[in-house]
Length: 257
Ligand SMILES: C[S@@+](CC[C@H](N)C(=O)[O-])C[C@H]1O[C@@H](n2cnc3c(N)ncnc32)[C@H](O)[C@@H]1O
Image (cartoon, rainbow, N blue to C red; front, side):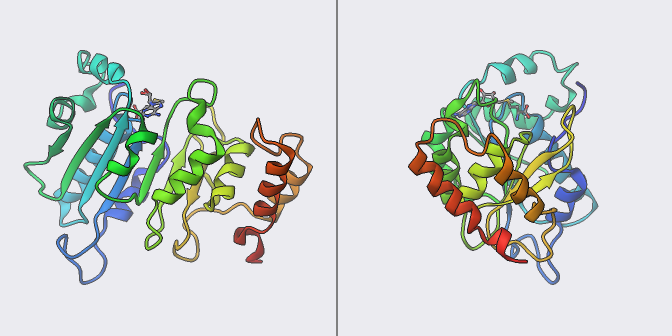
């Protein structure tokens, strides 16, 4: 691996998000806040930082604050000892967040990065700002079951600011993940393929611009879900399943026509 690559949000879209709204300056425009869950070897975090630096080199952009969470720093520490293979780590940011938990770009005052070390679900409330973008990149359900439960997505939805729409990107494309996100109140769209996955998921909290920047799943998906043999995440009682079913069937995503 020789370059950082944000796996789910395409760089052009992040560059677009960093553009200043008409008539605004970096000081007056709201910053873009990325929640990077988990940090791993920092490929997603660094791809975002490098994208900001490339855009800021061309002219003023919205400020960017990256907030990473990680409960095991081993993969970053290991990657840091192989910077010839992980070239994107040849940057002052990773050393600083490892040493001090925070980094402020010297060159660009609008660019900063915080790292919270520990379990995201315990530390989420410590984030200094609500997310605009969430990289949901925990290991799979098998390895990190806590992070794929219905309640987890309810909590995550609760951390989103009702006054700005957050966009969540994940490599996962399962039906039950879509169900968990819809059940929590997110809108669900199809994301770009990555690696072996033909499709990923983008979820949006309410308040996104219309038309939605991502293709929302619609009646066709709902029909397929009704016929699916795996409609619900594991471990739900029949009463809980009925609750979830009611939420999905009544979700405004499917009633908008
Ligand atoms: C697939 S890797 C992330 C790769 C990373 N996003 C990158 O760009 O290199 C998943 C990471 O999530 C971390 N993780 C899993 N559960 C977590 C939790 N509850 N809180 C914080 N980090 C967690 C794991 O330790 C692991 O490093």
